[in-house]
Image 1 (cartoon, one colour):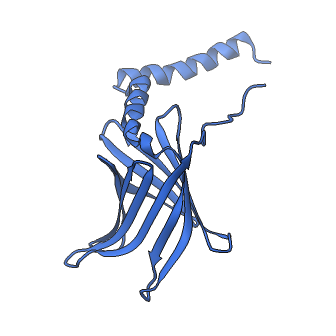
Image 2 (cartoon, rainbow, N blue to C red; image 1 turned 60 degrees about the vertical axis):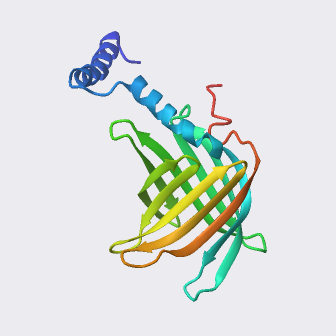
Image 3 (cartoon, rainbow, N blue to C red; image 1 turned 120 degrees about the vertical axis):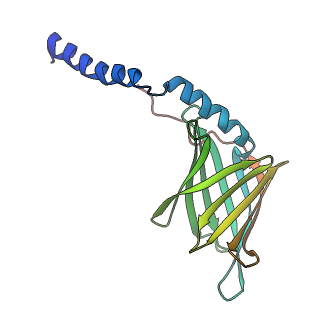
Length: 194
């Protein structure tokens, strides 16, 4: 068991960096979290469980359609938004699974999407619009895949367009989901002390 001196020494070691940070202009944590929660309010219409169809245009021009589900919820007391997407083939087999975390940086006044899919991860430009959001994935020199979503009245409609400099946008993805319920995910059922 640590002695009183050891506990005091540990307390001082923890206090010194905090005090030094405050003197050097470290942002106020409570103000940061409040700004993040406020920024996430514009995404409240996304919360819940969603189901519908998603269609991808294949390289040969054919189309592949799956049943798409999304569950969306707030975490860290509303400071971030967590999104999990799953896609199912006609036989019920899951063929798509991705996780996205949307956060807000009060210093830069910008949003970020951290996405994970098939062993890959990346940070992407993400911004809310009056009725949804837009995010982009780099797709080579001077090209992006731009995803544009409208989320209102219980419908989530999202399209993906390949946008390259000097070319007309090419639609590569379309998804239409209906909100089917509430969820307490991911914050629900936390581990409690006893």
